[in-house]
Amino acid sequence: MNRILIAEDEPRLASFLEKGLKSNGFTTTTVGDGVSAVLLADDADFDLIVLDIGLPGKDGFSVLREVRAAGQRIPVIILSARDDISDKVDGLELGADDYVTKPFRFEELLARVRVRLRVEGTAETTVLRAGEMALDLRTRRATVDGHSVELSAREFTMLEVFLRHAGQVLSREQLLSHVWGYDYDPGSNVVDVYVGYLRKKLGRDRIQTVRGMGYSLVS
Ligand code: CA
Figure (cartoon, rainbow, N blue to C red):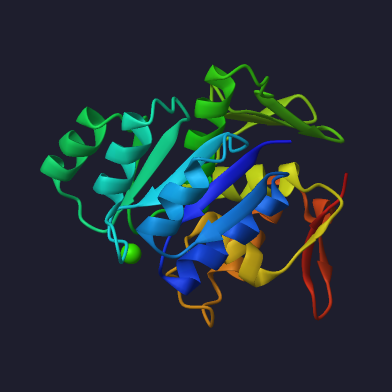
C-alpha cells in the first residue's frame, strides 16, 4: 500500500484529498503547515507528497527546498492556487515532479499520483471492466457489448469512477467531488443529469439508483 503525505491547510480541500485517496486504496497523513510537513517528510515511509504552495509557517517552496536538500528523492506533486507560470517553473526547478492548479478535479490529481507511483514501480491497469463494459484509459475508448460508445469527457470520467468502484454505492457528493471537483455546489443536480446521459448510452439497467444513498454500477 502506498503512503501519501498531504500538506494542505484548507480543511475542505484537505478532507477532499484524504477521502479521495483513501477510497482509491492509499494511506494518507495530513498536515496543515509547512513546518510539520518538513518534519513528517523526513519519515522515509512516505511514497509521495501532495504539497500546497500557500502553507502557513513555511510555504510549499521552502518545504520542497528542504526536502530535496535533505537528499529525499520522494515524488512531490505541488498544488497551487494560482495559474502562474513562474510558480510552476520555480516548483519544477526546486525538484517537484508534477504540478496541479486549483481548482482541479480529483481524477486529474489521481492520474498524476498514479503516474508518479508507477515510475516507482507500481503496475497500473489501463483497461477497466465490469460485465460487458470496458473502458480503455489510454485510447479513451468505451465499449459496451463489443460496440464502441461515444462519451463526452465528463461522461468518460464518471464512468471511470463507477468502474473503479463497481458494485459499490457512490453518493452524489462522492460523484460530484470525483468528477467535478471539490468546489462544486453540493446542491447541484448535475450528477443526476449525467447519470441519465450514461444510462442512455450504456443501457438503463447498468446504473442502479439506491434510494436515499446514491448510485451503483451493476458489475
Ligand atoms: Ca493553502
